[in-house]
Amino acid sequence: MFPHIINASSSSLVAIAAVRRACVLTTSVFNNLVKNETLTKDDASPVTVGDFSAQAVINTILSRAFPSDPIVGEEDAADLRGNAALRARIVELANKALAGDVQDGEKKEWGLGPGSEQSADEILEVIDRGRYEGGRSGRMWTLDPIDGTKGFLRGEQYAVCLSLIVDAKVHLGVIGCPNLPSDLSDPSSPRGNIFVAVRGQGAFQLPLFLSPLSPASTSLATKLTIPRFKKEELNLLESVEKAHAKLSFNERVAQILGVSRPPTRMDSQAKYSALARGDGGVYLRMPTGTGYREKIWDHAPGSLLVEEAGGVVTDSRGEPLDFGLGRTLGENFGVIAAGKEVHAEVLDAVKRALAEESKACRL
Ligand SMILES: Nc1ncnc2c1ncn2[C@@H]1O[C@H](COP(=O)(O)OS(=O)(=O)O)[C@@H](OP(=O)(O)O)[C@H]1O
Ligand SMILES: [Mg+2]
Ligand SMILES: [Mg+2]
Ligand SMILES: [Mg+2]
Image (spheres, protein in one colour):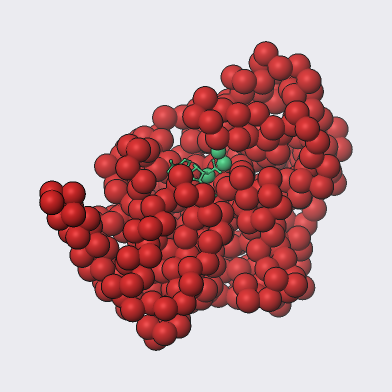
């Protein structure tokens, strides 16, 4: 069932290969991460050698496979130009990942295999291929090389996230979740899944560390459909970081909806993946009031995954997410993702909770 999708679109084969290579890299970085391999960016958020080298690997593959496609990537190489030790480590990690043997489902022409190592300048340049400003027309990729960097550093959930956007619509979404257990209620269940959605062709979960074309992978591939939830089965999927989403607001929404199960807190777009395969039923992310604008790479692949699994994704006013406004989602305010039967009810509850809040402010 799944190879049909891979063959139908060469972009999906390239994207899956790129995300898998990056996930092997980030897993190994986590196991060997030492002090001084993490920086704090101007916005006070962390970035590690894993984020930079994963962006180098994915951008290399995309640039070789689709030389004229622009990329909107989270990271840029500015901080590395003045830090020789960090730069050397990133070059070493990226080259090790690129030079690994070419596997089934990959091509040497994508800059892979022994002898594919690049110079330090080439690695910095390829990281900076991610500086595209975005826009409403044509093809572009979004890349979040490690989404949920804080989760990554804690050894919890994070995701390697890639999407292809054409004329502001997400056409392909690939999310690698190295630490996501196959059964959320059983933390000892096998970890490592990759989620793939192609517009109009469905959403799928595959084992991350097997070639997507191998019979073993094909036999384990599952098509994802969000089930119809009864009220007592729902629970909210939400951020771990209090600075990223207004968790007290979620509590009130859960109360209005009559949801009694405690929320599931998880870093990164693993929340969209979990929702798409039937966990939780609702992902709610409300702004904290700092004026932060959501980034397109934090939502593009996840939103397509949920829609292709039969769900609905809007902002908190019921508007579609607009991926054509540049690197951010612009005026979109919050995110509600849920199965189609539940979404309208959650939107009503959000509107009610917002009205209560503004009434309380006026008093
Ligand atoms: N203030 C604020 N508000 C909303 N979102 C923010 C904010 N600051 C950062 N970010 C982005 O949140 C991304 C992490 O995803 P999550 O919030 O879903 O996961 S977490 O549980 O909070 O870690 C995180 O992605 P990564 O930087 O890739 O980790 C950020 O892009
Ligand atoms: Mg970040
Ligand atoms: Mg992110
Ligand atoms: Mg990131």
